[in-house]
Structures are given as structure tokens and as C-alpha cells.
Amino acid sequence: MLLIAAGWITMLLLLGGVALDRTLTGLVTQQFDEQLDYMLTAMIGSAEIGPQGEVYFNRPLGDQRFLQPNSGLYWQISGEGQEDWPSRSLWDRTLQVRTTGFEPDPTFYDSNQFSGEPLRVVERSVQLPGSDTNWQFVVAGSREELDEQITEFRSILVWSFAVLGIGLFLMAMLQTWYGLSPLRRVRRAIARIRSAGTNRVTDPLPQEVQPMVEELNALLAHADRQAEEARTHAGNLAHALKTPLTVLTNAATAHAPDLDDTVLREAATMRRQVDHHLARARAVGRRAGGHARANVLEVAEAVERAVARLYPDVRFDIAGNASAQVAIERQDLEEILGNLIENAAKYGGGSVFITVDADPASAQCVIWVEDDGKGIPEAERARLFARGARLDTGKPGTGLGLAIVRDVVEIYGGSVELSESEDLGGVLVSIKLPRTPAN
Image (tube, rainbow, N blue to C red):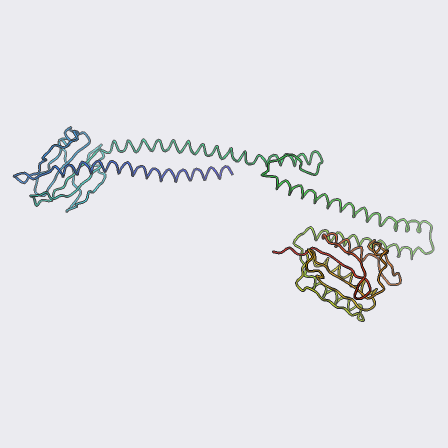
């Protein structure tokens, strides 16, 4: 990060330095050119034609450097068929005129015609009154002073930008160090979690990282809940298998004559318990994946077609909101509705009604499964959600259907309850599941 910041600072300072150097160089050169142009204009204003057609000044030029040999400031007047008239400062030298033809506007350029003395030159073509000659007025000044000014401000510019760059880099380092200090505190807090065995970040931290700390604590709490659920499931499964294993051990030790029947019966019990806990584990795993979505009516129709093959004499009616979707995996919704619809077909009187989204105004999607059977006494309804609980033992079953339904529904944050069907008179199972969040 610091290397990237240093690279950007260096590049921006270089670009800014080049732009500023060109701007200042242009301004200094322009100011120098304006001085030369001012002297050239004064020369033209003072020039007149003499009786022999020569040029002379009606008043002396104001700058005394024109009178000092090799002073660095020179002028010269040239004309076709006329001798060059140089300033005294040129001494025995002459200026080479670059302009060919008539050029009424000032022309500025650099010249190296004098060895060791670079010049800045301005030329202009003039026709003086009383003369048909195209006169070339030239003023030249040594670039030494101009180059010294440019070198001086470039030196100042380089040092200034160097100090600025170092300062910006140090500020970037300080800002990075200071800006990342909350994350270092979070790192130390997480290290204390490992060393101290705590499960929360409780250290007072800056407001900037508080949302991240809250998400971290929520993640730790979620991990704790999953670990606790795993321990609970393992303990429940161990407890559920303990009794059948004890029965088998005692029967085998006593050489019981019905050992075969006992093994089959207890093995079936253990298998039911294993299936139940596997269903819960699958639901928990799929819930942790997130982004669950299922269309209730589509799943209900698919389950109804499967159950109808087992119970061809039962009449099934499905109605409700065709677009209702719940935040649950399709496999888990199929397992929930499969248990409820099969129970209604098995224990009912021949009619099963399924209503999807029975209460559209509810925050959760309400699903009703009702039958026309004998119903369930109110005092027995809560007991039926226990593992292995059954009212009608004359029909095959494991007694785990409603227990699995309740566990899976609660894993997804829903609820299930039993009541009496007002329309059919049998059992009404009402399920509430969270709706799929709107995109």
C-alpha cells in the first residue's frame, strides 16, 4: 500500500513539476521578450531618414548598455543596399538578420551566433517615412540573465517538490499507520479470544471498526450455536441409541428365545432415530448455505402427485398463491409437505386440502394441510411432536414424521401447530415459513 502511495505521489509530483516548470519558464521568457520588444518599439519611434537616405535617431536611446561594448544588450538596423548600423555595444560584431522579406510583426527567436553568449533576438521589418527601403530593426539581449532566472526557480522548484514529496510520503505512512491501528487492536482482541478462551470481542474499539466487530461477534455466536447444535444432536442420538443397545445387550446376555424379533425391533428403532437426526443435520447444513428459495405451490403439487400414487382413493385439493416463495431449500420443503400430506392421506377420511399462503398479509407464508379424519384431541396435540409419538398404532409408521417437520421448520425460523379444521372437521396443520426476501 505504501509503495503504491509512493508511486502515485511521485508520478503526480513529476507531472505537476513539469507543468509548473513550463508555465514559469514561459512567463519569464515572455517578460524578457516584452522588455526587448519595448526597446525595439523605442528604436522605431526614434528613427528617421537623413538627407543621404541613412537612418538616424532623433533622440538617444535610454538604456546605457547600448553604449558599452559587449554589454549583453545590442541593436542593429539593416536595409537593402545600405550598410548595417550597429550599436556601440556590438563593437566589431554584427547581428545576422534571419527575416527575409517584409515582416511587420515582431519575431522572437534564440540565437547562438556569438560564441559563448547565447542571445534572445527580436526582429521587425519597418518602412520609415521618406524611404522606400525595408529596414530590419533588431534588438538582441544575452540569455545569461534569463537562463539564470530559469535555473534559479527550477532549483527552488525541485527542492520544494522534493520536500513536498517526502512530506506527503511521511503523511501517507502516518495516515496508514493511524488508519490501520483499529485493525491492529481487532487483531489483538482476536488473539486474546484464542488465548483466553472467550467467544466474543469485548474490548472497547473505535467506532470505525464497530460494524466489523459486530459482524465478527455475530459470526462467533453463529459458530457457537452450530457447535452447540452439533453437540446436542450427538447427545440426543447417543441417548436415543442407548436404550435399544441396552435391550439388545440384555437379550443377548440372557439368551432370550425371541432374540431375533428383539434385534429386528430395536434395529428398526435405532434406524428411525438415525434417520431423524440425519434429516436435522441435512436441514442445518442446507440452511447454512444461504440463498434458499422454493416455490410453495410447485412443491405442493409435486408432493401431491407422489402421494396420490400411494393413496389413489384420496381426493386432493390444492389452492393458493402460485407465486408464493419461502426462504427454505426445496428438498426440505418437500420433506415437510411430504410428511404432512402423507399423514393426512393415511389417517384422514379421504379428503385432503392444501392451502398455500393462507394469510397473504402475514410477514410469513402460512401453509395449511387439513383432512377430514377423526381429528386429534387438544390435550394430545403437543405430545405428537415428540419423537416416536403415535395415536393410531394400527397403521404402519415410525412416529417421527411430525417431529421431523417441527425440527426442520424451526431450523428455518418458522413454526408449526395443530388445530381442528373448520371446513373438514379433521386435523389442520398450520405451518409458517419465512418468505423469500424481495430483490
